[in-house]
Length: 300
Image (tube, rainbow, N blue to C red; front, side, top):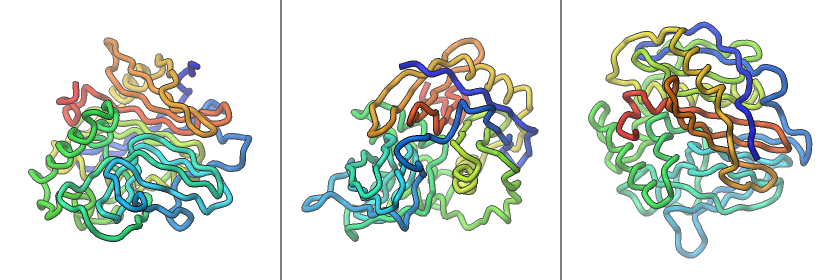
């Protein structure tokens, strides 16, 4: 199975300290809502029961039960908070209505292994720095994630339990940061940090993107703290998108009712990792990371 990169429209960038935010719109139906099997939604905490493995918790696994009437899509980078330690979803999972699934996760809190049996999700996500580490092979992924989380201690107040969630709780609101609002019909965002694009993320609908927007931006702001205040020019953002558009995404993982896709377009224009989810023959989520960016440079 091979799927072409979707056609996207990139809007004018808005500087925000070291960040520049470019609104993105999906063109046509190349990134659309699936038709069969019921509505597909991203994570909603009140409708999910998230628990440690019964009997003996496992660092790399959680059990998620979907109590909603719709299918739920858990994405790489979704944070699950509580339990014996905070985790991040490391591979996408589609869970049918009323069903349970074992979800692969990684630890983002190194110095705690106790607490309650259940987790919650506020919809929060990791930023590009940690998100890139989730693209590693399972064998060295956990060490890479821990190493990435530890880097925040150099620019932010150290966490007693070495928890990524503590670094997200830096004490400012998006209103205080003057983050631009979501625009009509907007389905995604390209984020530049310190003069260069670092990440593109696009959702299936405007509503799904709007729910995720503040969490995407808060994580990116956390990554940018201490970075140079340099706006990312539109020409660099458009060049990055043009390079991504040459990608052909191939199946990397079979999901229940869908497919996870990967591509690594490496050429003179762009060196990136691309991850996407297909469901009912529709591309429903996409994220691309610029692996030439200084924030991710050690991963090259």
